[in-house]
Image 1: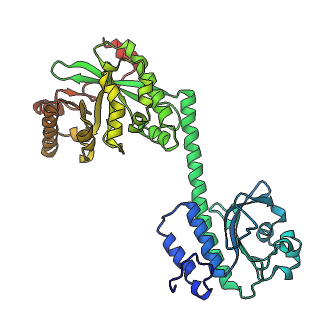
Image 2: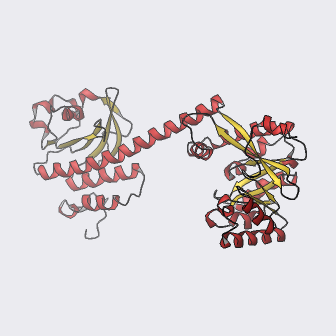
Image 3: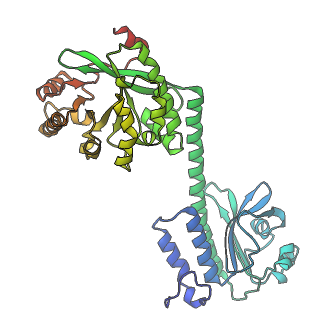
Length: 420
Protein backbone atom coordinates (compact mmCIF):
# COMPACT_ATOMS: atom_id res chain seq x y z
CA UNK A 1 0.00 0.00 0.00
CA UNK A 2 3.11 2.25 0.02
CA UNK A 3 2.11 3.78 3.34
CA UNK A 4 -1.14 5.24 2.02
CA UNK A 5 -4.19 4.90 4.21
CA UNK A 6 -7.28 3.09 3.03
CA UNK A 7 -9.24 6.31 3.41
CA UNK A 8 -6.86 8.37 1.26
CA UNK A 9 -8.96 9.43 -1.70
CA UNK A 10 -5.85 10.63 -3.56
CA UNK A 11 -4.43 7.12 -3.86
CA UNK A 12 -4.32 5.77 -7.41
CA UNK A 13 -6.52 2.84 -8.52
CA UNK A 14 -3.48 0.57 -8.99
CA UNK A 15 -2.41 1.13 -5.40
CA UNK A 16 -5.94 0.45 -4.22
CA UNK A 17 -6.37 -2.88 -5.99
CA UNK A 18 -5.93 -4.86 -2.78
CA UNK A 19 -8.30 -2.72 -0.71
CA UNK A 20 -11.53 -4.70 -1.33
CA UNK A 21 -9.86 -8.01 -0.60
CA UNK A 22 -8.14 -6.73 2.53
CA UNK A 23 -11.48 -5.33 3.68
CA UNK A 24 -13.34 -8.60 3.15
CA UNK A 25 -10.57 -10.50 4.92
CA UNK A 26 -10.59 -8.16 7.92
CA UNK A 27 -14.39 -8.05 8.10
CA UNK A 28 -14.51 -11.83 8.37
CA UNK A 29 -13.21 -11.40 11.92
CA UNK A 30 -16.69 -10.19 12.82
CA UNK A 31 -15.65 -7.01 14.63
CA UNK A 32 -17.41 -3.68 14.26
CA UNK A 33 -21.05 -2.64 14.22
CA UNK A 34 -23.26 -3.08 11.17
CA UNK A 35 -22.95 0.65 10.44
CA UNK A 36 -19.16 0.57 10.58
CA UNK A 37 -18.92 -2.55 8.43
CA UNK A 38 -21.24 -1.30 5.69
CA UNK A 39 -19.64 2.17 5.55
CA UNK A 40 -16.21 0.54 5.33
CA UNK A 41 -17.48 -1.67 2.51
CA UNK A 42 -18.78 1.34 0.60
CA UNK A 43 -15.53 3.23 1.10
CA UNK A 44 -13.44 0.26 -0.03
CA UNK A 45 -15.35 -0.33 -3.25
CA UNK A 46 -15.63 3.38 -4.04
CA UNK A 47 -11.87 3.88 -3.72
CA UNK A 48 -11.10 0.73 -5.68
CA UNK A 49 -13.34 1.78 -8.59
CA UNK A 50 -12.25 5.45 -8.40
CA UNK A 51 -15.86 6.61 -7.94
CA UNK A 52 -17.19 9.65 -6.12
CA UNK A 53 -20.26 8.33 -4.31
CA UNK A 54 -21.23 4.94 -2.93
CA UNK A 55 -24.44 4.17 -1.08
CA UNK A 56 -26.85 1.53 0.13
CA UNK A 57 -30.52 2.21 -0.50
CA UNK A 58 -33.62 0.59 0.98
CA UNK A 59 -36.90 0.19 -0.88
CA UNK A 60 -39.87 1.01 1.32
CA UNK A 61 -43.40 2.23 0.62
CA UNK A 62 -42.64 3.15 -2.98
CA UNK A 63 -39.57 5.20 -2.08
CA UNK A 64 -35.83 4.75 -2.18
CA UNK A 65 -34.23 5.70 1.14
CA UNK A 66 -30.49 6.23 1.55
CA UNK A 67 -29.37 4.18 4.55
CA UNK A 68 -25.58 4.41 4.16
CA UNK A 69 -23.57 6.93 2.12
CA UNK A 70 -19.83 7.37 1.49
CA UNK A 71 -18.42 10.09 -0.78
CA UNK A 72 -15.34 12.10 -1.70
CA UNK A 73 -17.41 15.10 -2.83
CA UNK A 74 -17.46 18.28 -0.75
CA UNK A 75 -21.05 19.04 -1.72
CA UNK A 76 -22.67 15.67 -1.27
CA UNK A 77 -25.73 15.29 -3.53
CA UNK A 78 -27.39 12.74 -1.22
CA UNK A 79 -27.44 12.18 2.54
CA UNK A 80 -28.42 9.43 4.92
CA UNK A 81 -32.16 9.64 5.54
CA UNK A 82 -32.99 11.30 2.22
CA UNK A 83 -35.55 9.60 0.03
CA UNK A 84 -37.13 9.99 -3.38
CA UNK A 85 -39.76 8.17 -5.44
CA UNK A 86 -38.52 4.70 -6.29
CA UNK A 87 -39.77 4.88 -9.87
CA UNK A 88 -37.61 7.95 -10.51
CA UNK A 89 -34.41 6.18 -9.46
CA UNK A 90 -31.69 4.20 -11.18
CA UNK A 91 -32.12 1.60 -8.43
CA UNK A 92 -35.61 0.47 -9.41
CA UNK A 93 -34.76 0.35 -13.10
CA UNK A 94 -31.69 -1.76 -12.48
CA UNK A 95 -33.69 -4.19 -10.36
CA UNK A 96 -36.41 -4.65 -12.97
CA UNK A 97 -33.95 -4.79 -15.87
CA UNK A 98 -34.67 -1.49 -17.59
CA UNK A 99 -31.10 -0.34 -16.96
CA UNK A 100 -27.90 -2.41 -16.93
CA UNK A 101 -26.04 -2.95 -13.66
CA UNK A 102 -22.86 -1.43 -15.11
CA UNK A 103 -22.99 1.89 -16.97
CA UNK A 104 -19.76 3.48 -18.21
CA UNK A 105 -21.49 6.67 -19.42
CA UNK A 106 -25.12 7.33 -18.50
CA UNK A 107 -25.44 10.09 -21.10
CA UNK A 108 -25.07 7.46 -23.83
CA UNK A 109 -28.06 5.42 -22.63
CA UNK A 110 -31.53 6.74 -23.58
CA UNK A 111 -33.25 5.00 -20.65
CA UNK A 112 -30.83 6.71 -18.24
CA UNK A 113 -31.51 10.11 -19.80
CA UNK A 114 -35.18 9.69 -18.87
CA UNK A 115 -34.12 10.06 -15.22
CA UNK A 116 -33.76 13.70 -14.13
CA UNK A 117 -30.73 12.99 -11.93
CA UNK A 118 -28.66 11.96 -14.96
CA UNK A 119 -28.32 15.55 -16.10
CA UNK A 120 -29.07 17.30 -12.80
CA UNK A 121 -26.21 15.76 -10.77
CA UNK A 122 -24.88 14.79 -13.36
CA UNK A 123 -24.40 11.01 -13.44
CA UNK A 124 -21.54 9.68 -15.54
CA UNK A 125 -20.47 6.15 -14.53
CA UNK A 126 -22.88 4.05 -12.48
CA UNK A 127 -22.86 0.55 -10.97
CA UNK A 128 -25.78 -0.90 -9.05
CA UNK A 129 -26.39 -4.38 -7.60
CA UNK A 130 -29.69 -5.49 -6.01
CA UNK A 131 -29.39 -6.43 -2.33
CA UNK A 132 -31.19 -9.74 -2.03
CA UNK A 133 -31.85 -11.13 1.47
CA UNK A 134 -31.69 -14.83 2.32
CA UNK A 135 -35.48 -15.14 1.96
CA UNK A 136 -35.29 -13.81 -1.60
CA UNK A 137 -36.65 -10.37 -0.75
CA UNK A 138 -35.05 -7.35 -2.42
CA UNK A 139 -33.95 -5.00 0.35
CA UNK A 140 -32.60 -2.26 -1.93
CA UNK A 141 -29.37 -1.71 -3.87
CA UNK A 142 -25.63 -1.38 -3.41
CA UNK A 143 -24.47 1.43 -5.72
CA UNK A 144 -21.54 3.53 -6.88
CA UNK A 145 -21.56 6.47 -9.26
CA UNK A 146 -19.42 9.34 -10.45
CA UNK A 147 -20.26 12.62 -12.13
CA UNK A 148 -17.89 11.74 -14.93
CA UNK A 149 -17.91 8.74 -17.31
CA UNK A 150 -15.46 5.87 -16.77
CA UNK A 151 -14.81 3.75 -19.87
CA UNK A 152 -12.39 1.51 -17.96
CA UNK A 153 -15.16 -0.19 -15.95
CA UNK A 154 -15.76 -3.80 -16.95
CA UNK A 155 -17.05 -7.20 -15.96
CA UNK A 156 -14.40 -7.72 -13.29
CA UNK A 157 -15.55 -4.55 -11.56
CA UNK A 158 -19.14 -5.71 -11.73
CA UNK A 159 -18.16 -9.08 -10.26
CA UNK A 160 -16.41 -7.32 -7.38
CA UNK A 161 -19.47 -5.13 -6.82
CA UNK A 162 -21.59 -8.28 -6.68
CA UNK A 163 -19.24 -9.73 -4.07
CA UNK A 164 -19.56 -6.62 -1.91
CA UNK A 165 -23.32 -6.47 -2.42
CA UNK A 166 -23.69 -10.09 -1.30
CA UNK A 167 -21.54 -9.36 1.75
CA UNK A 168 -23.59 -6.26 2.61
CA UNK A 169 -26.87 -8.12 2.13
CA UNK A 170 -25.74 -10.73 4.67
CA UNK A 171 -24.85 -8.03 7.20
CA UNK A 172 -28.19 -6.26 6.73
CA UNK A 173 -30.04 -9.57 6.85
CA UNK A 174 -28.45 -10.43 10.19
CA UNK A 175 -29.36 -7.02 11.56
CA UNK A 176 -32.97 -7.35 10.38
CA UNK A 177 -33.22 -10.81 11.92
CA UNK A 178 -31.79 -9.49 15.20
CA UNK A 179 -34.30 -6.63 15.14
CA UNK A 180 -37.12 -9.09 14.54
CA UNK A 181 -35.99 -11.29 17.43
CA UNK A 182 -35.72 -8.21 19.67
CA UNK A 183 -39.21 -7.08 18.67
CA UNK A 184 -40.67 -10.52 19.39
CA UNK A 185 -38.95 -10.67 22.79
CA UNK A 186 -40.24 -7.21 23.66
CA UNK A 187 -43.76 -8.19 22.69
CA UNK A 188 -43.60 -11.37 24.79
CA UNK A 189 -42.31 -9.57 27.87
CA UNK A 190 -44.68 -6.60 27.65
CA UNK A 191 -47.63 -8.93 27.08
CA UNK A 192 -46.71 -10.96 30.17
CA UNK A 193 -46.42 -7.75 32.17
CA UNK A 194 -49.69 -6.27 30.94
CA UNK A 195 -51.64 -9.47 31.54
CA UNK A 196 -49.81 -10.25 34.81
CA UNK A 197 -49.25 -13.73 33.39
CA UNK A 198 -47.14 -14.93 36.28
CA UNK A 199 -47.67 -16.18 39.78
CA UNK A 200 -45.53 -16.72 42.87
CA UNK A 201 -44.75 -19.94 44.68
CA UNK A 202 -42.88 -20.26 47.95
CA UNK A 203 -40.25 -22.85 48.83
CA UNK A 204 -39.65 -23.49 52.54
CA UNK A 205 -36.23 -22.78 54.04
CA UNK A 206 -35.84 -25.13 56.99
CA UNK A 207 -33.75 -25.11 60.18
CA UNK A 208 -32.50 -28.68 60.31
CA UNK A 209 -32.19 -29.00 64.10
CA UNK A 210 -35.96 -28.97 64.63
CA UNK A 211 -37.25 -28.98 61.01
CA UNK A 212 -38.85 -25.57 61.61
CA UNK A 213 -39.58 -23.35 58.62
CA UNK A 214 -37.70 -20.10 59.14
CA UNK A 215 -38.20 -18.57 55.71
CA UNK A 216 -39.60 -18.92 52.21
CA UNK A 217 -37.90 -18.22 48.90
CA UNK A 218 -40.34 -16.50 46.54
CA UNK A 219 -40.12 -18.02 43.05
CA UNK A 220 -41.83 -16.65 39.95
CA UNK A 221 -43.72 -18.99 37.63
CA UNK A 222 -44.98 -17.85 34.23
CA UNK A 223 -48.26 -18.87 32.59
CA UNK A 224 -47.56 -16.94 29.38
CA UNK A 225 -46.65 -18.63 26.10
CA UNK A 226 -44.22 -19.94 25.14
CA UNK A 227 -43.73 -22.02 28.28
CA UNK A 228 -40.17 -21.39 29.45
CA UNK A 229 -38.27 -21.41 32.71
CA UNK A 230 -38.34 -18.19 34.79
CA UNK A 231 -34.66 -17.49 34.16
CA UNK A 232 -35.35 -17.28 30.41
CA UNK A 233 -38.18 -14.79 30.99
CA UNK A 234 -36.05 -12.58 33.23
CA UNK A 235 -33.08 -12.83 30.86
CA UNK A 236 -35.25 -11.74 27.92
CA UNK A 237 -36.68 -8.88 29.97
CA UNK A 238 -33.16 -7.66 30.74
CA UNK A 239 -32.15 -7.94 27.08
CA UNK A 240 -35.02 -5.72 25.88
CA UNK A 241 -34.83 -3.21 28.72
CA UNK A 242 -37.70 -4.47 30.89
CA UNK A 243 -35.71 -6.04 33.71
CA UNK A 244 -36.79 -3.46 36.27
CA UNK A 245 -40.48 -3.61 35.36
CA UNK A 246 -40.72 -7.41 35.43
CA UNK A 247 -38.57 -7.95 38.49
CA UNK A 248 -40.31 -5.25 40.52
CA UNK A 249 -43.73 -6.59 39.52
CA UNK A 250 -42.72 -10.02 40.80
CA UNK A 251 -41.29 -8.60 44.03
CA UNK A 252 -44.38 -6.49 44.64
CA UNK A 253 -46.54 -9.58 44.22
CA UNK A 254 -44.31 -11.53 46.63
CA UNK A 255 -44.46 -8.79 49.27
CA UNK A 256 -48.24 -9.12 49.38
CA UNK A 257 -47.74 -12.56 50.96
CA UNK A 258 -45.99 -11.22 54.05
CA UNK A 259 -49.24 -10.38 55.78
CA UNK A 260 -50.35 -14.02 55.51
CA UNK A 261 -47.09 -15.54 56.75
CA UNK A 262 -46.15 -15.66 60.47
CA UNK A 263 -44.11 -12.65 61.50
CA UNK A 264 -41.10 -14.70 62.60
CA UNK A 265 -40.62 -16.07 59.07
CA UNK A 266 -38.63 -14.17 56.47
CA UNK A 267 -39.14 -13.83 52.72
CA UNK A 268 -36.20 -14.31 50.38
CA UNK A 269 -36.36 -12.37 47.08
CA UNK A 270 -34.20 -12.87 44.01
CA UNK A 271 -32.90 -9.55 42.66
CA UNK A 272 -30.46 -8.47 39.97
CA UNK A 273 -27.55 -6.20 40.91
CA UNK A 274 -28.64 -3.65 38.29
CA UNK A 275 -31.98 -3.14 40.03
CA UNK A 276 -30.23 -2.57 43.33
CA UNK A 277 -27.83 -0.09 41.73
CA UNK A 278 -30.60 1.85 39.98
CA UNK A 279 -32.63 2.17 43.19
CA UNK A 280 -35.61 0.10 41.99
CA UNK A 281 -35.32 -2.45 44.80
CA UNK A 282 -35.15 0.27 47.45
CA UNK A 283 -38.28 1.89 46.00
CA UNK A 284 -40.32 -1.31 45.91
CA UNK A 285 -39.32 -2.12 49.51
CA UNK A 286 -40.18 1.34 50.78
CA UNK A 287 -43.09 0.20 52.97
CA UNK A 288 -42.04 -3.42 53.58
CA UNK A 289 -40.98 -4.83 56.99
CA UNK A 290 -37.32 -4.92 56.08
CA UNK A 291 -36.28 -7.15 58.99
CA UNK A 292 -38.25 -9.92 57.27
CA UNK A 293 -36.60 -9.47 53.86
CA UNK A 294 -33.59 -11.29 52.41
CA UNK A 295 -32.28 -10.17 49.04
CA UNK A 296 -30.62 -12.90 46.99
CA UNK A 297 -27.98 -11.96 44.43
CA UNK A 298 -26.70 -14.82 42.33
CA UNK A 299 -22.98 -15.51 42.05
CA UNK A 300 -23.44 -15.54 38.25
CA UNK A 301 -24.55 -11.89 37.90
CA UNK A 302 -21.63 -9.48 37.45
CA UNK A 303 -21.36 -6.44 39.69
CA UNK A 304 -19.31 -3.78 37.89
CA UNK A 305 -18.70 -1.59 40.94
CA UNK A 306 -18.77 -3.27 44.34
CA UNK A 307 -18.28 0.02 46.15
CA UNK A 308 -21.36 1.62 44.55
CA UNK A 309 -23.34 -1.57 45.08
CA UNK A 310 -22.46 -1.65 48.77
CA UNK A 311 -23.32 2.04 49.20
CA UNK A 312 -26.70 1.54 47.51
CA UNK A 313 -27.49 -1.47 49.66
CA UNK A 314 -26.21 -0.03 52.96
CA UNK A 315 -29.39 1.93 53.93
CA UNK A 316 -31.49 -1.20 53.44
CA UNK A 317 -29.11 -3.38 55.44
CA UNK A 318 -29.02 -0.75 58.19
CA UNK A 319 -32.81 -1.07 58.42
CA UNK A 320 -32.77 -4.85 58.69
CA UNK A 321 -32.52 -6.26 55.18
CA UNK A 322 -30.18 -9.23 54.90
CA UNK A 323 -28.09 -10.10 51.84
CA UNK A 324 -27.69 -13.62 50.49
CA UNK A 325 -25.28 -14.78 47.81
CA UNK A 326 -27.08 -17.40 45.76
CA UNK A 327 -25.60 -20.26 43.70
CA UNK A 328 -22.31 -20.31 45.61
CA UNK A 329 -20.17 -23.14 44.32
CA UNK A 330 -22.11 -23.51 41.07
CA UNK A 331 -19.71 -25.20 38.71
CA UNK A 332 -17.00 -24.26 41.19
CA UNK A 333 -17.37 -20.64 40.11
CA UNK A 334 -15.38 -17.87 41.73
CA UNK A 335 -16.52 -16.45 45.06
CA UNK A 336 -15.88 -12.77 44.38
CA UNK A 337 -19.36 -11.68 45.52
CA UNK A 338 -18.85 -13.42 48.84
CA UNK A 339 -15.47 -11.82 49.41
CA UNK A 340 -16.57 -8.31 48.36
CA UNK A 341 -20.08 -8.07 49.85
CA UNK A 342 -19.86 -9.73 53.27
CA UNK A 343 -23.24 -11.46 52.91
CA UNK A 344 -25.40 -12.49 55.83
CA UNK A 345 -26.28 -15.75 54.09
CA UNK A 346 -24.36 -17.99 51.68
CA UNK A 347 -26.59 -20.29 49.65
CA UNK A 348 -24.85 -23.38 48.32
CA UNK A 349 -25.89 -24.26 44.78
CA UNK A 350 -27.62 -27.54 44.00
CA UNK A 351 -24.65 -28.57 41.84
CA UNK A 352 -22.51 -28.58 44.99
CA UNK A 353 -25.11 -30.43 47.08
CA UNK A 354 -25.87 -33.16 44.56
CA UNK A 355 -24.20 -36.43 45.70
CA UNK A 356 -22.34 -34.63 48.46
CA UNK A 357 -22.68 -37.81 50.53
CA UNK A 358 -20.35 -39.66 48.12
CA UNK A 359 -18.25 -36.93 46.49
CA UNK A 360 -15.20 -35.98 48.55
CA UNK A 361 -14.50 -32.86 46.46
CA UNK A 362 -17.96 -31.44 47.11
CA UNK A 363 -17.65 -32.26 50.80
CA UNK A 364 -14.29 -30.49 51.02
CA UNK A 365 -15.56 -27.33 49.32
CA UNK A 366 -18.69 -27.27 51.47
CA UNK A 367 -16.61 -27.71 54.63
CA UNK A 368 -14.44 -24.78 53.56
CA UNK A 369 -17.49 -22.57 53.01
CA UNK A 370 -18.95 -23.58 56.38
CA UNK A 371 -15.67 -22.58 58.04
CA UNK A 372 -15.67 -19.28 56.14
CA UNK A 373 -19.24 -18.56 57.23
CA UNK A 374 -18.41 -19.29 60.86
CA UNK A 375 -15.48 -16.88 60.71
CA UNK A 376 -17.50 -14.09 59.06
CA UNK A 377 -20.72 -14.29 61.11
CA UNK A 378 -22.79 -15.47 58.15
CA UNK A 379 -24.65 -18.74 57.83
CA UNK A 380 -25.06 -21.40 55.18
CA UNK A 381 -28.25 -22.48 53.41
CA UNK A 382 -27.94 -25.62 51.29
CA UNK A 383 -30.16 -25.57 48.19
CA UNK A 384 -31.58 -28.51 46.29
CA UNK A 385 -31.47 -31.15 49.02
CA UNK A 386 -33.31 -34.16 47.61
CA UNK A 387 -32.11 -37.28 49.44
CA UNK A 388 -31.78 -38.29 53.10
CA UNK A 389 -28.12 -39.17 52.47
CA UNK A 390 -27.39 -35.65 51.25
CA UNK A 391 -29.15 -34.21 54.28
CA UNK A 392 -27.15 -36.39 56.66
CA UNK A 393 -23.88 -35.41 54.99
CA UNK A 394 -24.77 -31.73 55.28
CA UNK A 395 -25.58 -32.03 58.97
CA UNK A 396 -22.26 -33.79 59.53
CA UNK A 397 -20.60 -30.77 57.89
CA UNK A 398 -22.49 -28.45 60.29
CA UNK A 399 -24.83 -27.02 57.66
CA UNK A 400 -27.83 -26.11 59.76
CA UNK A 401 -30.28 -24.66 57.23
CA UNK A 402 -31.48 -26.06 53.91
CA UNK A 403 -34.15 -26.13 51.26
CA UNK A 404 -35.03 -28.63 48.55
CA UNK A 405 -37.65 -31.15 47.51
CA UNK A 406 -36.81 -33.42 50.47
CA UNK A 407 -37.79 -30.62 52.84
CA UNK A 408 -40.59 -28.96 50.88
CA UNK A 409 -41.69 -28.28 47.32
CA UNK A 410 -42.50 -24.75 46.11
CA UNK A 411 -46.16 -24.19 47.00
CA UNK A 412 -48.83 -21.58 46.49
CA UNK A 413 -49.57 -18.87 49.04
CA UNK A 414 -52.73 -20.67 50.12
CA UNK A 415 -50.78 -23.86 50.75
CA UNK A 416 -48.15 -21.84 52.59
CA UNK A 417 -50.71 -20.34 54.93
CA UNK A 418 -52.18 -23.81 55.59
CA UNK A 419 -48.85 -24.94 57.04
CA UNK A 420 -49.35 -22.79 60.15
